[in-house]
Image (cartoon, rainbow, N blue to C red; front, side, top):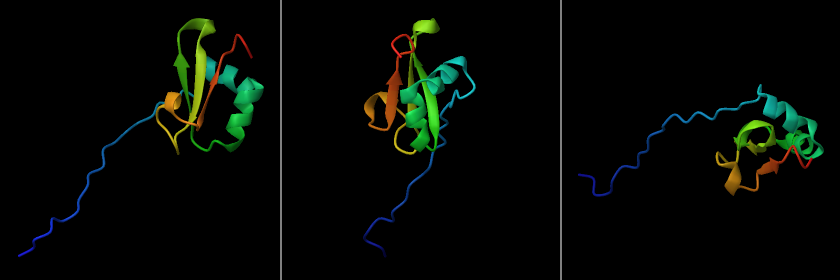
Length: 82
């Protein structure tokens, strides 16, 4: 007889789209802030915030976040302002 429950957990697959080959990622890498962030990021991913050439680009590091808008491990780049 065991009175304490056995610890258990399940892993669910979670896929982050890296978007590293997109034109937006190329723009982000070309900026000083983007290249600086990418010097230390080990698992970068790119997310567009908007559409077209005026879209802002988030670069996040998947070691620390999967939501770049709520983490210190991400940078938002605005190509029009860079």
